Amino acid sequence: MTPTSKLEFGYGPVLRLAVAICLAAAAPTTIAAEAFGLSLQSDNDEYAGFNQRDRWYSNGARATLTQVAERDGWRARMLAAWCDRLAQCAADATPAAMFAIGQNIYTQNDRTLSVPLAHDRPIAGWLYLAAGALQDGDDARDAVQWQLGVTGPAAYGEQTQNLIHDALGVDRVPTWRYQLRPRLGVNLHVERNRRIGLGSHLDAVGHVSASLGNILTQLSVGAMLRLGWGLRGAVFPSEAMLTAGDGHEPRGVSLHAGFRLSAVAYNAFLDGRSFGNVSQVRHRPLVGELFVGVGIPWYERGSLRITIARRSIEFQGPGVDAAHFSPQTYGQIALTWRLP
Image 1: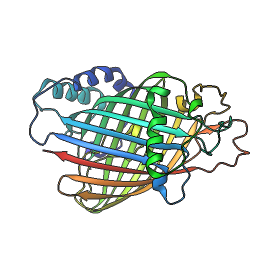
Image 2: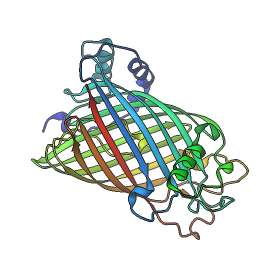
Image 3: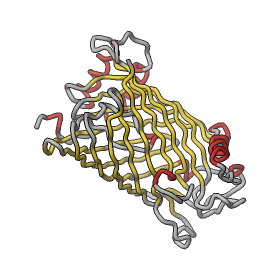
Image 4: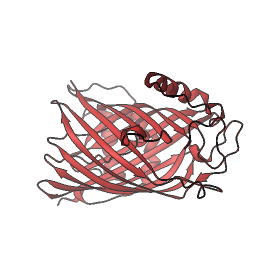
């Protein structure tokens, strides 16, 4: 086992250089052929099976473009300095810039009510842009991204959901006039994953990530087992808002299963103020998630990953226990292409 295969984590120094790295990543540069990657991810509770309720984390969508930096370019040198001095990135990792656009939609447990319940989570939308950098290797991944976005009517959560519901012939949610109030959100997210080979067809991936900002502040740890063919890379399944896009396309079919545990200090989607409604809920300090899924090669340059996740209830407050809410199950569908 090489030193880069070990589970080595740490984020204090990374935060100090996050701004400089993201600005460097956004700068134009000359790149080689096949230097682009496109990842599309869609999260929805309906993917978890028939007759699933459209509730809570109702929908998440994100498009991520990665752009490999030339190894002799100044941006790649800055990323290498970040890794050598602060992040302990893998020696074989490929430096890349990352750009994304995404949207999250949150609704209540019963979406047919005309007035939201005070003991249920607020209705909310979140529309954001993201930019950052990542180092992606066969056994390691390090990523940092800034997110800038808005909540409230400018997030277009109501319009997006109405468009989808109208197309599917589903009733509209009538409580969007009580959604989370407008807020300009800025969030920093850093992630570190490490892969350990356990055999020719088995490996493990360890994960740690941190988010800091006025939208989400939390620390997460997790682990995942994978069984399959051609295992490589250290991508860890995450909801669309927190992903940095997929890395290496798989050489064969693989199965994955794991967990994530998050210590939450602030969640604007639960702790923020709504229009015309006083919410009685606040975030839970600990949130757990179990997941299982499959990864499949997609033609010669792409991959398809399908994951089903079971998440514990994210909020607490008067009346929540009496409501007998059950944990949420939702699905993730992620498509990735290497673009010539």
